[in-house]
Length: 165
Image (tube, rainbow, N blue to C red; front, side, top):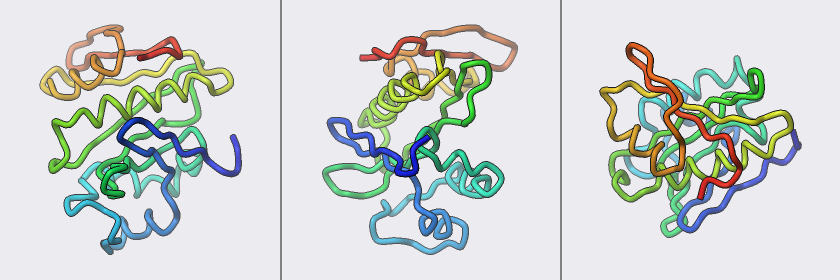
């Protein structure tokens, strides 16, 4: 992993690694001006609280804030749970309610998954979704992921090629 994580840029988004200050702001409840009014969401609080235990999540192939290019505001987060297990990385994502329905989650998921598949030893990016969460299922389908398996309460999706467009 590099010491200077790469920003990923899509048509409408920038995926940028969290800074120490942004993690601290989530944990202590301060509100930087570059955050959407409804950021951070509950999941962002959970992830920020786990960074100390999982410092690799802040590396090049880790978690990122989703920044709306037009406004410059942080509107969500997306992340890879590094390190890979047998060549597989899990991905998770969330967009704040005020920006949902704009296609940001599939756009960010497609970009980060394609990037993850360039990491040494990584051949699969996967996500687990509860059947009761159709919006998340649609995100993964729109991002080019394929259903891999269905267990009792979980549908597993995966991307196994670098071209997810």
